[in-house]
Image (cartoon, rainbow, N blue to C red; front, side, top):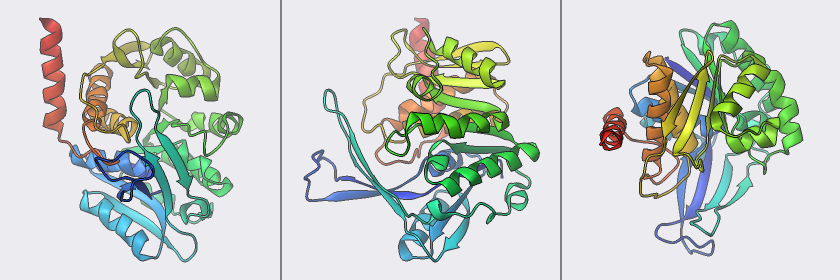
Length: 322
């Protein structure tokens, strides 16, 4: 595998389109999970991917596994006799109405994962890149311990390790998120974080995404830090500082269908670009274009093609050059 991800798979329920009200009589169901989203997106972008997780040995658990495989992802599942598939409920907002999220994932099979139950050397053998997000250690004490174990094994095996902070205040508070995640940073080669999460979790707030990235790179000794900012006033959507050199990505104008999974599409675009030996400047632009295209897709998965991303980047560059 080029890319290995590790995290929980779950089901998302939302009012079936075109309804947006929480009292809708019909709910649409989508397979979800941050690290699974990244794996699926990377697979659609022609990178071989593996998703490692734990699911209940039930019809719904096998449905999640089959869905991941249908999108070209190689799955490595620990099948559990206890626990269940986690669920989250989302009502998608549009300005000025905010989105609403309710999690129902306590006692999920993944959250009951034992610290020493996975054979990391064999699961990572032959891979080039390992990715996980801050959602995974937030799920339980055992998941936090396994996250540290996974990152340590990936680093020891020589993989490039990326980590998306992906803070979820409904899963843990900022103090706990910082206590658990700061020690993990020693394993990380590429840190991905939004400006809001950098402020909330790490207490880093500065004038620009670039300055936040530099501050985090210096604090943790990480070679590449990517900071996203969808509300930036200067027309940039993200900045990366890699080996001291900064690059940025523009905001791409699209008609928004749904915002879910946008950050995961960004992460997948970044990882795929780097696996394919593109520069950091190109990688962050392609990542931003991946995120923009995901805004036009319903569901948690990015299912576009690399040509779609390249076309968006080229059209934007041509327009900016006029």
